Amino acid sequence: MKIGYCLTGSFCTFSKAIDEITIIKEAGHDITVIMSGNAYSTDTRFGKAEDIIRKIERITDKKILHTISETEPIGPKRMFDVLCVAPCTGNTLAKLANGITDTSVTMAVKSHIRNAKPVVIGVSTNDALGASAKNIGMLMNYKNIFFVPFTMDDPLNKPKSMVCDFTKVLKTAELAYNDEEIIQKIY
Image (cartoon, rainbow, N blue to C red):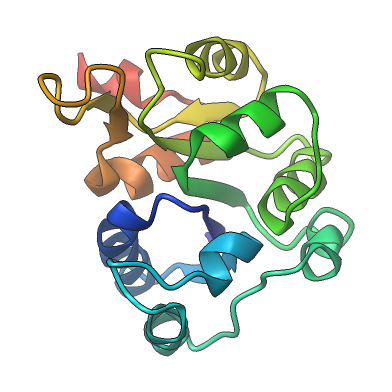
């Protein structure tokens, strides 16, 4: 498959996302990474942006797309079979649920989904069971949106926080490509 893989600003999950990007590449899929402007340019305690970019580009052998103008052609050029957004922050969930297209990632999703192709979302937000819950619910009801299984990551210290199981991103994408939910295959 040709997979677009988007990262938004859940910096604490970048190492898991990069591990999954490696697995997708090693499985023989053509992968292009897209990063939101904040994800692309922000140094955090989890790593310097420059180092993260270098590592991802070495894995994929491609430049990261990180501007709206770079991601707008995704749909017209039919660049991907599946588009993944993992990690997908609460901010990005809200924008996707409400049709706001003001970042490279939201533009990538808008451009890709116009062709009725699957978008896979890997939730990673501290307010999934709070303010983001309604946006998750809305997106779960949209055609061509598929969710990576997700769960609470620290119920005692972060009772509203949820994160996807990054090890299931590829499986979710493979099933979504065939218009199947991963939940159907678990039970």
